[in-house]
Length: 287
Image (cartoon, rainbow, N blue to C red; front, side):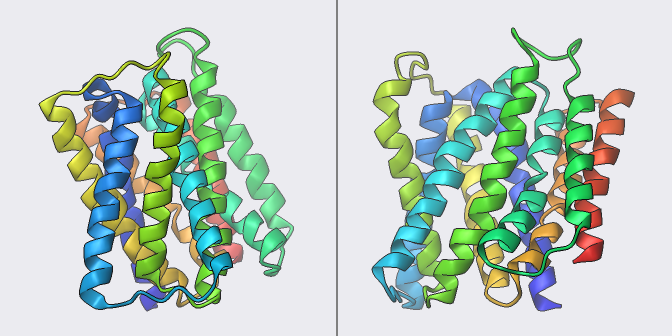
């Protein structure tokens, strides 16, 4: 029960970061946003590890797993998520990227050898069907609006895998949740720093005072707190059990986008929500 509460709390915290990203990319370019966000999370994680004294680094392989998770989730997942936010409405991006629990369960079954159920395939079909409804062209912004939906769905795949497989393996090898978060965040920020020279050719630097405030909110509430809760939950229960609970991020983030961003989902979007939510909850119910 404690693990489930921790996972649900992590979902609520992550939803803050997901929602803040929309005004965030309006106030700051996505390269600066990503680097500053994970730099701040790294500082917070370092202070937390220093204060708790939980420096356990059991093996080089555990460090590599944490680094890989950080690059996949923070660098590439964050990049595609923000690119999707630039192209389409926040609620549509949030819904598709919230398919992460499905990919997390599949990753747990394939790589962690946790039990497989055929309903997972049914859930995958529901998520893909929902994705079709969520590629609504009339209200999307920019050329090729369907690209935003593809970016969001790919983000969900990256997040779902990174949040379960490499992180669970690192914890199983004895790395503490606090140390894992430090390596994870630092690797994600470093990954974007390495990509910055290439990305700057098409994404010029653009920052505003409001952007700094949004980055701080996203880093503290959406990333640091969310990941700390999630990693502690992951140390208490199987990844395939907790991953579907992460799907509640969809409900929290959708609520935030309606209340704070004043977005109004259309009937077509609501149908897409129903399909994606059905896929997530099908996995939750069967696992």
